[in-house]
Structures are given as structure tokens and as C-alpha cells.
Image: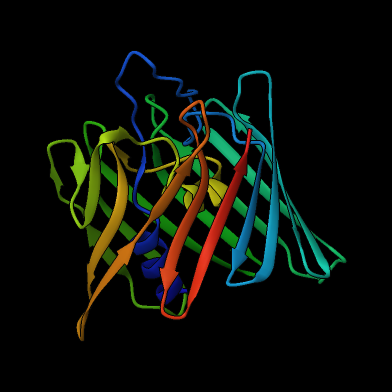
Length: 235
């Protein structure tokens, strides 16, 4: 679980903060426009289809994931202090997933608790205003993990940005959105790449976008070695 936490934060750290007059951000979601479906491919292979349903407040009500031989249904229940995500698998594999999310008065996530069978893990988040500064992960039988984030001119460090494109749910934002239905880090601009340093090497990633006639993201491509991952959006 510790390794998953680190990879999750490294690959999912850019979210929506739209400050222009064309701002169409919906409060409580990570995506500027209401994305209805996302098809995910890796290479030539279909991997999953995500169908997103919103409630009357334009918050995510459910996300249904159709993959080969399996359907996953994520239901969102909101309260004044946050929300709960319940995951059901079809066919039933006997594993129960539940995530409790605590938010502050500004709607920012301050704590998540994940339950899988009899195990649980907790992640705590700290902010400086609207900027996420740290994340701490705790789980039984695992060494706690701690990550910090630095910022420059409204964008989190470690990524390359298009200064003429505002963040509207690109990579890696869409990955976080499809998991939690919301975001953690609100940057000003659209990330077009990442430079991630590990103990042994520096990884440089590139994000390629296609846009529809209304300026919305229609396709995201992530080249990786001989293969490319694709996210195709519909609205």
C-alpha cells in the first residue's frame, strides 16, 4: 500500500483552477467541463470505459467502470463534512472497498480513509491557502510515508506547463478525478509533461492533447516506451 500511495501522488498531482472569464469550473469537481465518459486504452488494447453521472449540484454521483469481464460501480454520498465512496464489483469478488473523505470549509480534502476488507489506511493533507503542501500516509504493517509539494507562480513544481492553456482536467488530473471524483492540487495551467526524480533516475514524461472545436480536451496521449496510453473524453 505504501508503494501505491507514492505512485498515486507522483502521477496525480495537477488539478483544475480556472481564473479566466471563460471559467466553467463546477464547484466540488476537478474537471472544468462535465465529462460524461472516458475511454482508456493502452497501446491498441481497450482497458476501461468510465461513465460519470452527476447530481443536481453537479458533483459526481457515481462512476461506473466497464472493463474486460468486470464492472465496478462507485457511489458517492455527501455530507457537510465530506463524502463516502462505496465500491461494488460485478461479478462479486468478495472484496469490499470504501473510502471516507473529510473536507474543510473550502471543500479541500484534508483526510481520506480507505477500507479494504479488514485493513485500512489513512492519508492526511495540509495546505497553505489553496496550495497543497504535504501528504502523510499511514497504514498497518507499513512504514509511514511523507511527501511535500512546492509551488511557483500558481503551478506545482515538477511539471512542465502550457502557459496559454488553463487547467481543465488533463493529465494527471483525470486519473485523480476518476478515482475520487475531485482533486487535491489546483494549478493555474495545463500540464504538458513531468520531470520526476527517483533515487536511481530522472523520468521525463510527455502529455499530448487534442481539443474539440469548443476548446475542450477530447484526447490525451501519454507515450511510454513502445506503447502509448490514451484517454478519450466525451461531454
